[in-house]
Length: 453
Ligand SMILES: Nc1ncnc2c1ncn2[C@@H]1O[C@H](COP(=O)(O)OP(=O)(O)O)[C@@H](O)[C@H]1O
Ligand SMILES: [Mg+2]
Image (cartoon, rainbow, N blue to C red; front, side, top):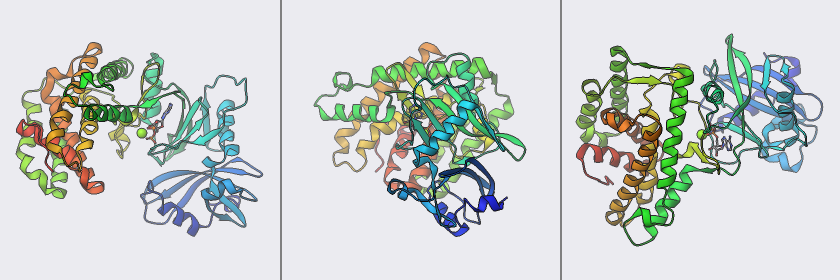
């Protein structure tokens, strides 16, 4: 659908191709087609929203076009349309402001629908700049007021982030950033979320730097009691446990839960075996733990109680939780990374999120050992920090929701399943870190804290 008007604002296909293939989030190889081009502002600068298709995947892009590119936007240039520079619009506050205006007006522009519930503005609009921290998608932060997240890759349907945050907001869950709007269109005839607008959580600190600072502090002082170290994290881990349990309880209240039937349980266990097969094919070092892993997966069918399934966060770790002065806030409710729509919305055991947080605590404790000379001395200390914070997290969780440690067969299996995925991922992208999940697996299978490096 590249109309003549679109030609006036799109970079040449060669320029767009070159730029896209240099982006880490772009997974396409074949030719790129611009399947939907929407003008959100005319004149100078122009703002256009583009849906791209490549190799059966869909992406979106916000483009700005100007007669002349000021120095501060040169780094964002993608190419030229005629002789006008085309650039990534998120870097241009004049254009990010247009998006917020559309939300305030609940505009419909061609096939794009801005659905907003913004309070009337009494002062000038906050400036919208791209979020500069680690992210998978593309977020624009408006002052201390809003975060507008555009999903890089588009999946037809309502995004779980919108569905879950809306449900949690309906019961005033205190552990979320309140949803304030969404940008939607239709893809393949299905209503599809392009972006979500959420309340900005001011003064938030991510769980990961907090936890790793605590580990560092504990290791820096002589002594083997993490409670006595200045940066003890256990009180925060405890509060985080309560927060996750509250979110789980509110998801059950709003979106329901069910007992898994025998077929679902069998499928659940067989999926763990398949993920292990895939990891074994790439990481032969896993072989020595194969029997132990398979036995713990099978134990779920034999010994675990009936599995209850519900909507969960799906990608919960210390990098997805923000400690605001008011509470722990869980962000990024998109579900399992790289999953298709069904996978991302699939009801799972609550143990799934708990297991991924426990894995993340293990990472926080163990990352300091990677490449360290004095692993033998550090290992027991890391284990002590981990033990204290795992217990604190699970204690907090069990104050608000059922204690998942009671069904430790299920929790252990899910944790091991996650570690298997991590082994495969680390081996591909960060081989020196493979030792972390491998050690966690070795520890469960052998019953001893070990470092497999
Ligand atoms: N509502 C919010 N308030 C403040 N910061 C936020 C908010 N939502 C996200 N962030 C910050 O932006 C980062 C990326 O957001 P996230 O939703 O995880 O996007 P992505 O899908 O790109 O990972 C988070 O790690 C957090 O630091
Ligand atoms: Mg994230």
